[in-house]
Image (cartoon, rainbow, N blue to C red; front, side):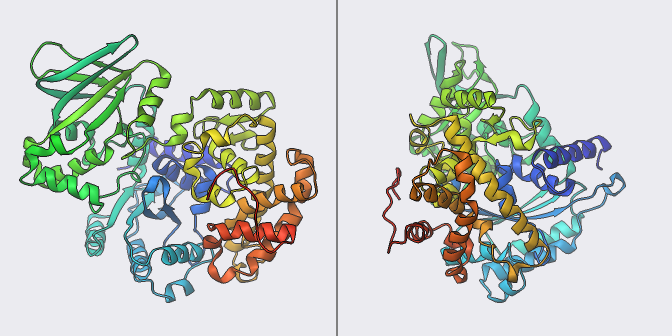
Length: 556
């Protein structure tokens, strides 16, 4: 049963995002209301993933996640109604046949699939096919609706259909589950409890920092991370990331964790595993007693997420085995705002909090926010931080980093394919001493000009003009056009940081990119603009030389 209040909340979220991101309607806003909290994507990244139009084969969004080394394909099917009277409708079972038919042809790399798909979907399919000859990545099917889930018989039919693929998972996102996610995100405090084993714990205190190193039992950890509303699901809020982070039971490391925990060597688990690291706002327990319960306020598992997820999988099939499994745990109470960031960044990278989130409270990011605010812009250190402000005046930090990397760093391919590194290993090079709000604004505003052209192209593609659309390359090549705008300024010996100068280079930049890209259309633009070759060929075209040779401040 769909509560009227839940439906209204979800519609309000869809409408808010439609307005904030200048989307065409509430239905499009619903796509964003689902994908943003699940995957942590920006509005631009969501738009790039959407394939919804005629001949989409039931795949309304195709998101291949390569961030943080996790290879996972998310295929999404959406159903939306703007009438409360239809909110009780079940998800249509006919969509199962569409998606499963697509999945089989896609995984079988059947050439006829390309002839039946639209111009937004085809390049994404080609990219995955050309890069991976066998599906060693995970596939997740998402059925999303502001109505209710499948009828029981339809869900059984869906589960039977995907059973032949060990690497395929199914997720249903209906009105109730989506609103529960919003409610959890707004909760001021989350709590959890762990039972420390016997007297095997050690506490250290240094001023405003303290921590506990202890041993816990695996089934206690599973209880902590299990969703109280659905015992088959994990509390994703404990990881500050979403389903993309767990690499699955087929991953070699996780397979080993599962085999150890469920096998004869369960008693050795403590010695073989690196354990779990948790940061929290506060912890409390009775010292000096055996097996005390420790209460955690706003806990976050910043390291050991793969272990936690793997043990959760074991609990589903062999929970009794976990009684023999002990786990090392490190718990840090961080009252200093920066300490959480340092702990999360310093522990090893099995499962990472998103690097953009880690840097959101960095002093440089705060200074950028203040500086841009003085110019009338709202810098979003966190996703949708200023969602109530006009879309034209909001600057997303990740998008800004991509623009800066393309325009001043001469790396448009990296801006597209490795954006997660902007706030990680490339951070000090992007936000260096030469960085200024003025330089950032020029790059960002130039990207906005390119994206306006891109938006028009995507509309023409949705209207069915793909075969005759000369600027189809803009869908995947927008960062490269931005790069070309900057290079033309340098060629003409004009100031690259002056927006009034740079914006006059837009048409020439599009013409240059069109000339080069048209020669490689057969390779698919999706793949072409993810290669180093595209950048070097564009450089050669701009400066009329045999090959590139420009120096980048980052190595390839």
